[in-house]
Image (cartoon, rainbow, N blue to C red; front, side, top):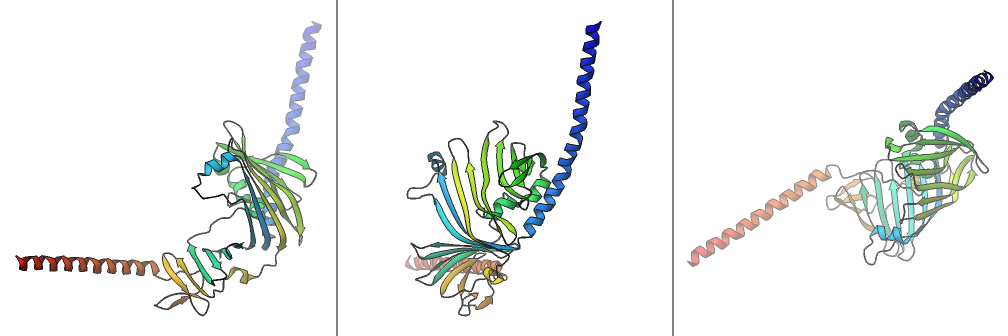
Length: 346
């Protein structure tokens, strides 16, 4: 009888402990749920506080032999393992300038909010060439792309739309409390992404990992190794990215120096053309004019950089059709002349 009483008391104690644990976990879960909205709010505020920024970016790539083999480079081709460029952004606009001293070449990529321009200028020849692209070409080797973006999308939008949730809070010696979130980017269950967000550093992402669901292996890992407070804003100064696909490992180190915040002038995103050159916009060739704009010769059209030739595609198509018609007419005339000459000889 006493044994039955003891067993009953033990079961009652276990059930009571379980109920207590459930009750204690409920407020914690609610705290995590409420914390997500707060994180997203402060993340958007942190990003909006950076109205403009600029830095000298250095990128170093250390590939494995398997990674190089996976690129299937052509004979004579090599992987660029070291780059240094100047980066600027202001709102949706951004610009990078990369100098190749061996060729006296400066390559500029500029997004003016609507169109991307990729151009190269050769100093000795005073000659420029380039092309306008129809949309933004995302770049990934900048401090803000690691801190506030995920695969080219604003991080706050990804965390909200793709169903990320707070799973725990960790303490970091350098960054303080880190909120750890997990979810599936694009809601694809094939991989799980985990992000560590520093609440005391503008709610920036300081670590990110992607793990393939089926084998359970981490395939990519990004982490911020150093930050600097500039103009009241925290900015990453060193980021390390690792690709851990078996046999195709690669490490990329991104270092930012000479960082400045909220002082980039608007004219940084305008180009004053000089010298000679040829650029292409929507298939239409443009020449540098004497007044520093781009125009189409010999028609003499003038318009600012970043705008494409109005009706250019239609005019070009009409010109090609006219040329084709004249070519067909000439070929037909030659054949008819040969036929008549043959008839006269006979």
